Length: 613
Image (cartoon, rainbow, N blue to C red; front, side, top):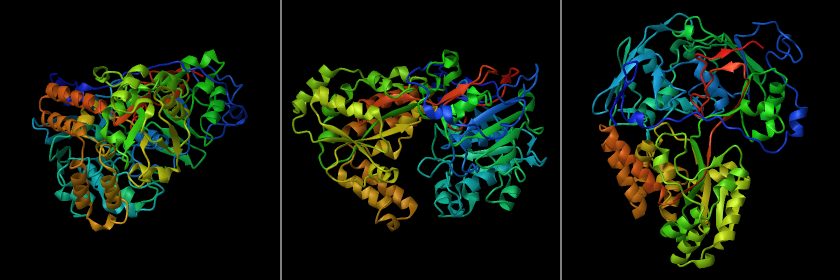
């Protein structure tokens, strides 16, 4: 694949390999719950005579006000929670704008934000961003030095001392970022940020220096938002409140009431304000979730909301709402992650793991888990390159034969298998039943409190536990290359022995946690992990390394990374079950909105228009 020159002068190489397609899908099942009928709406705009049900505003009225609903955010500081809290992130991503923005129509592409152009060196070790001349909403000039200060704030280990309900997100970590000198700063080995490879060479030029190529680097910048140093330092806990807020995005927060609602107004100082026709965003906070929001939606008090839970029940019996239920990109996959056990039948016998994967009817699972769909491979369908991975079929006859070839016909000598989870899920119960029906293997679903689930997932579980953990991943746009280049601990610990996993837990979370510095701890964990990989996983890791080494040749890097994905899928250390994405209710009056399933950019309002109410 050759490099692509984007219209703003950016060279896109490896990033060109992926990008999801928007999918609109009708979902019908179940019935509207009684709870939804009885919940009343509340929040900003509820008492506005132009917005209440039964009113008929004149033509042209309210055409520039978007009415939204979501659960109340517990904070609006980008340094806490990062992109993991959609209800807050959708607001923060409009209040501030980073160097680049995600293209909602092609998530492999990045659009100019504060940076009007950027380029990477041939070796992938230097990125140079040219900033446009723009200002904060209070009129102060926004310069490259503002970004340097903001990144020092995000990555400072002292951030953890600030009181907040959420732990610091830091928008990255020393185990992922490849920015020169950042791990030592992040872990507190130095407090001198000038040693980090982030430098303002002049007011409009920002340069990043890397220690090695990082295919996710541009993607990581979407959620690294610039903050106004003076206003943050003067109001550490609540600089984001309307009366104190200094931001640079299109929609500053102008009204806010916790657990009630807020209002955002299009900024007169935003550099691209002429591309926005929506002047006001009125936001209703509704803690009752989708059922309560649906009442407001049906009463024509709101225009859109993100659905959490089963959206099909919300529109049951309402054919007029089918096209208003919109699913964003299918970029998440839910599956079973192998956990270490004293009994090594699953770790050491590939045919047993493969048999378990082939004995699962994913279409049947999807029928009890709407709006998710059957996920027969490791990379969801809305990510470019997904079609290069073979689908895992539902083939119980082949599964039985594999189990017999492995010496375990009818489930002989296989202990009770457990599926660790943090919540009751019908699809997991169905999976356990399928293993019993098709393979004669007994299985159970082990539901744990969230904290216990986390500890057991990371290695603190009984030695007799044999089985998997339910887990899911939300890939970045670079998913195929990312899985080749950026395997997380969840990936590279799936094939290690029980005793090694327990030692890693003790070092990272248990009795030996204080024995090492953060950098020493990372090195020790890496040493223990890599020394104990199975041959199957070692092959995957070698292909990972080859893909990274080939980043200067995007076509070759893509080829190698795709093969790495296929290799990993065929280890069956992870067994994919379903593909998923966010879902939304969107009124027909909203034109041009493209929702995604990326938490750092759920949707934008550039070019979006509204018909009259």
